Image 1 (cartoon, helix red, strand yellow):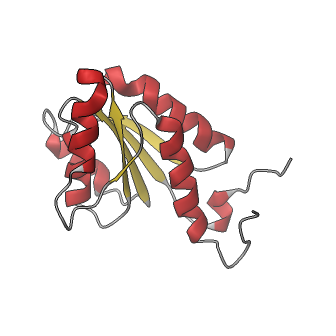
Image 2: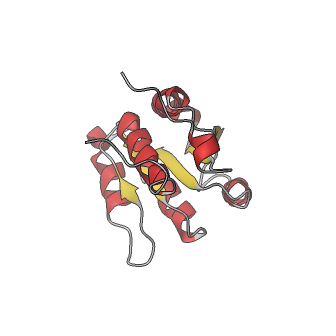
Length: 148
């Protein structure tokens, strides 16, 4: 089995912010963190609501992370709000809080032109982490190509 590549060294100061819209979403965010930790990727985990505390979200984005993973249910405004104030990649993870998560899925997937958000499956924090790893890998592509 191949060793995990330390993206902290390969990509310089690349760091991910995992942010949840509420504490009830933390169980999904922890799945993201587990995958990132296993691949030696630096990240912070925060709880901040686009509706209840937009200034906190803005302050988090202003720290200048390389990539954002936003975990949110219901109207799931958080990923789109983050995407509207950064030019960095944003991955949205819809949470099955109500309506089986379809409300959150559609909110994240149906962003207006110019405000892109990548969307993974409902409650699928693991795929958000794997997508983030692929995006981070692009920065070190010339150093070490992916194996098929």
